[in-house]
Amino acid sequence: MTQRRLFLAPLLALLLAVAATPSAAPAVPDDTLPARLSDEEFWKLSQDLSEPNGYFRSDNLVSNEIWFQYTLDDLLKRTRPGGVYLGVGPEQNFTYIAALKPKMVFITDVRRGNLHTHLMYKALFELSADRAEFVSRLFTKPRPASLTTKSSAADLMNAYWDIQTSPEPVYKKNLQDIFDVLQKKHSLPLSKDDLEGIEYVYHSFYWFGPSITYNSSSSGNGRGGGNMVDYATLMMTTDGSSRQRSYLASEETYSVLRELEQRNLFVPVVGNFGGAKALRAVGKYIRERGSFVMAMYLSNVEQYLQQDGIWNNFCGNVASMPLNESSTFIRSASGGGGGGPGGGLLNSLGAMQAETKGCGFASQPVGPDVRLKR
Image (tube, rainbow, N blue to C red):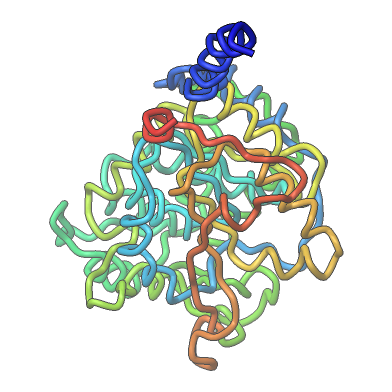
């Protein structure tokens, strides 16, 4: 018995030592997100990640969410800097991006028309040195002399609201400038359908001006139609504390977007959130470069995913992404007070990692904050 105890003692000590040793964590690469994408890399990435063009009932050229700034303070408290922003839809993403200052952006939408919208914006950001020039080009209106880099979003919108839209030759010149940025400066091999899609989007902003709404391009009659908030009002809304924080609120917020566009780090993707390719491919790209998802703006897409019976596919797609405990959903749903401009949509936040746990793929935490804890 004594000999047996003497034999077992070292073995037991060895087993205890092994058990006490932290298990080796899977190797996580350092953050190698690009500081800039070449034009060829930008277009290849956008197209390689994309799925075939899909359908949605609206052109969705403008947001209809008047309360979208109310989550900003909480969003900034929840998220951690240095990651990637994901989203869907048009310009409401710009305000979240300006606040979060991500290293890279991927906007995934089921319609290729949304890609056309963001290519239009890409050109306009690059063409416009400041906000006043940007709004002038966006709506094809002459720039008022009174506007400066210190002008507020309200100053901008009020000034351009009262100015007569420029004649069609100016619109055509501006449209050609957009095409030249995309085709000559960046050498993007845009198809005829892509060029026509970009023209359709830009003409909608030319035709309706700052009064363009979510319904404008779909209804095709009246100045906006329906009970939807217009672009000018969206830019002048506040965060609930009477602070204007849209992407046009200051030159600083505007410059966040402009710099991302100039570096080709704002990448539009075509894909269904419940599809088999796009979101998983975006997540794979981010994971392979050692980064993580900061936030993902959903709008109310989950409503349609549930109606189509593919919400679980979406959940699995998100769970496959590199998430950590700070990765945050930004979503909207009914309940914003009802009536009035904007349709009563209310924005809220959710924990991406916790909400998608067990959705077919265990998401792996990524980022320096997580590696230090392991």
